[in-house]
Amino acid sequence: MSETDPQKKFGAATRLVHAGRDPSAQHGFVNTPIYRGSTVLYPTYDAIKHRRGRYNYGTSATPTMDALTDAWTELAGAAGTVVTPSGLNALTIALMASVSAGDHLLVTDSAYRPTRIFCDGVLARYGVETTYYDPLVGAGIGDLMRENTKAVLVEAPGSQSFEMQDVPAIGEAVHARGGTVIMDNTWATPLLFPPHARGVDIAVEAGTKYLSGGSDLLIGLTSANAKHWPAVRRTFDHFAPCAGPEDIFLALRGLRTMPLRLREHGRAGLEMARWLQSRPEVLRVLHPGLPDDPGHAIWRRDFSGASGLFGVVLKPVPEAALAAMLDGLELFGMGFSWGGFESLVIPFDCAAYRTATAWAPGGWGLRFHIGLEDVADLKADLDAGFARLRAAR
Image (cartoon, rainbow, N blue to C red; front, side):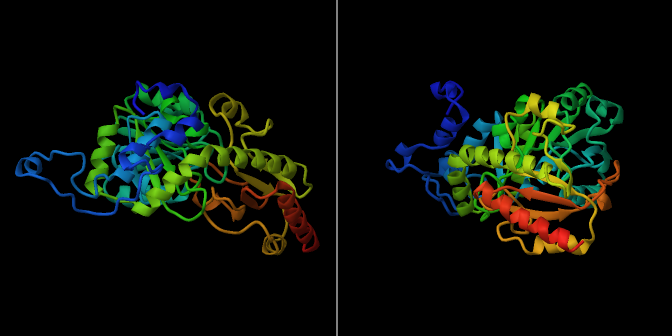
């Protein structure tokens, strides 16, 4: 859909059904087919000399890739999007497009751990210094910026610990000093948090999660506003990180139903979070959608909903009791990633890799992803798990 398309007046769910599709271009079939290939043939010498035509090589674009990036660009309110083989790859493209040797980078202390590993490993090796900051710093981020600070990475809520950052305030302070704001927006997707309308220059999404919805593909998206889009596109072209055509097709299929699934994940997640708050075994629940969460006011102001991912801190128990609880679960699988149709739980501890803030919650941390099962069945599964935990104390 173009900027002048009358369908711009429609809601996000309607637009996602239609964005990036042109049935008339594929003999009336509803979905864009999978285009596999590297070589693109030119009809004439003049055409190949001047690169006439929409496509020139499989690493730069295909009709399948365009269908996804066009739709995501519209959803995110961006100037352009590139698609990568994973969420982490999408984030590395954003970082590499924003910093160079000798630059300084600020990263929230609550960032996704593989992001930290990339910053402390690859970026450090190439002369970029990273400083981690308190995710609750807000507009005070400006006081942490140096002459050579080129970019600030935010993530809201924080990975595993779920602190809510004031992204608009951070954006205003960073832009006043000429910096770039990068955001990992995987938790909310642009459906719940429109990043470029909230002061984010480059937004990253692990489409592996809610865009996929099926726990069966790896894919990432990096979108940028008009000012930063050329650098993102140029960096993508330098690396040519190509997502598989079948994965792109599956992501397109997931895109059409993502609003419905995300709404149900959010509803069930909040119901489970409230239920867990009432449990005597739970010390506190880490979910910005709960009224007593420290980040609730920011969440209400900036977000239009919640996803199904949140954390829980248990009251102190021996590790054997925690193991007894988790090992007997029937419906909650233990595995990394999230965003699929099935519920998941993992134990976590941020203490080992926090450097700007201390992580000492007072008990074991559990991260839950609430899937699409019946909530009553999920409660029963956890209730039995808590019984095992109490028996093993």
